[in-house]
Amino acid sequence: MASEQYEEGLRIRKEVLGEDYVDAALAKADDFNRDFQEMVTEYCWGGSWGRGLLSKQQRSILNLGMLAALNRPHEFKLHFQGALTNGVSLAEIREILIQIAIYCGIPAGIEAFRIAREVFKEEGIDVSLMDSEGTE
Image (cartoon, rainbow, N blue to C red; front, side, top):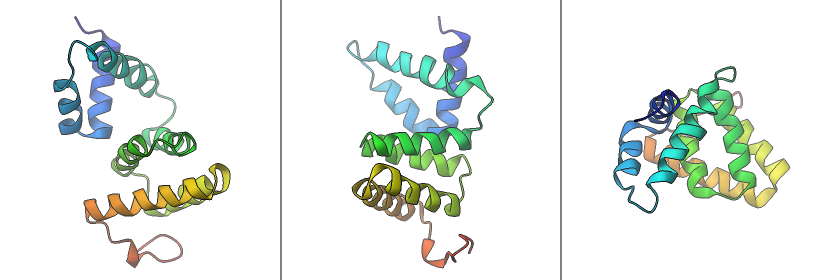
């Protein structure tokens, strides 16, 4: 039986990453990695994201910085999409990516901007209309 923390984690995970993505990840779980998927949902999403205090936007910003520093492009892309879902603005995204380049190194910044462009294209977001303030 799932715990309350698991259920809360599942709810938040679906809100941030999308129901289709989470359902697919859980459906692909097998005897080898099922416990891991449950742990991720319960402890990462329920035990961390479910604690409150920090907003989803703040947690997204933290994750982008940490994932860039750890050179985890697949997870970075996933959480970049989540940051957009969580309402992190394009101007904020740009500032986050610049700070990543400064603190994690230019190669990490290049990769972060490359992934950002990929996600923007996939989501149909036209950043060419942004001004220096990050508004259209």
